[in-house]
Image 1 (cartoon, rainbow, N blue to C red):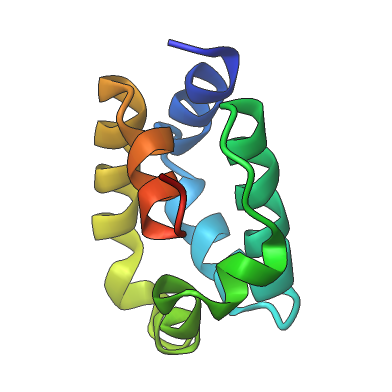
Image 2 (cartoon, rainbow, N blue to C red):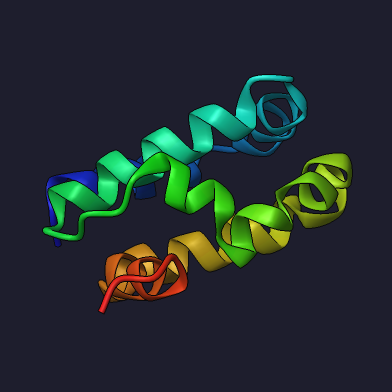
Length: 101
């Protein structure tokens, strides 16, 4: 498990994560930050996808509905993220979701 995954697991496992996550997702700059941070994280795993490509992808297009209903998705997102980081599948699956081969 890489350093990025270990750090993410520690953060996601904290009890206060859900409220902070919902507030962050609802902020007006969260979509741009999401695309940049995801691009950076994937790059550290050897997968090169630009923030612009992430925004234009199907998951990126669905971001607005996700953002508007962050409370509804918080528990699902946190549990799936933890599962993905722990299993090591997060980088491969996210890369595939955003067009990497």
